[in-house]
Image (tube, rainbow, N blue to C red; front, side):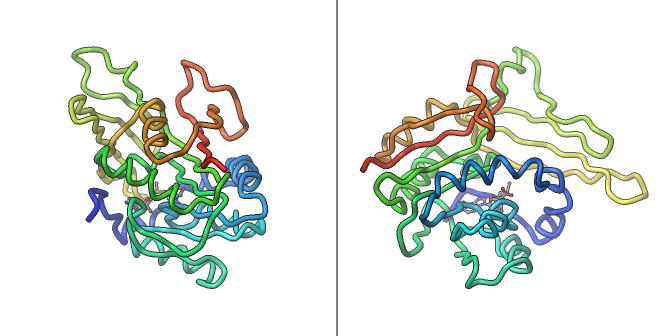
Length: 246
Ligand SMILES: C[S@@+](CC[C@H](N)C(=O)[O-])C[C@H]1O[C@@H](n2cnc3c(N)ncnc32)[C@H](O)[C@@H]1O
């Protein structure tokens, strides 16, 4: 049993259109370079592979990819793009599901560790990554730095997108370390807005390092983006790489 919210069929059917920009060659190029280099000649396992935004093009580059995904509708959208032999997907929870074989790379992108809403499950997710890694293999996470510097006392929300079709803001439970992302998205031509929200357990890089250590992994590298920009105190997100000792 996982604390993650289950992504619905309606969300799955909208996902690729809404993520068109983040699925573009310009955005994905550096992601695929980064992950492809770490996979080397081995196999890659994507936790929460979704509709295959990253996994499918990585497979097209010649890296054998296996996915774990909780939502059957998300996996069904992926399956329209690529068959099971080419890119196997196991339905299950990334904190607990075990797939056969060893991997040189396990990766979990797009803030998705936060979909696990408890610290215990996030630790289990690191343990599960370590379980699948060959000695010397890497676990990669892409995650936003919690935007708490934008939340002075008395303020209840932090906007993260104010654009023509979308208004997005986060609200915070600082005790439970959970944020709720609120989305108002304009649908179709009638100009009406659809409201949606999702819960996330945010975590600082240092907490992830401790989770990695509990799982027997060592921090190898932390950068601010997929091009390898240095991670600084002003970075909005990080790409972190932990290595399983040889
Ligand atoms: C933001 S999407 C990311 C999908 C894909 N990795 C990408 O980069 O486009 C989050 C995905 O995580 C999946 N997910 C959430 N909790 C999960 C869990 N505990 N185990 C496996 N997948 C999970 C959701 O169903 C959804 O497909």
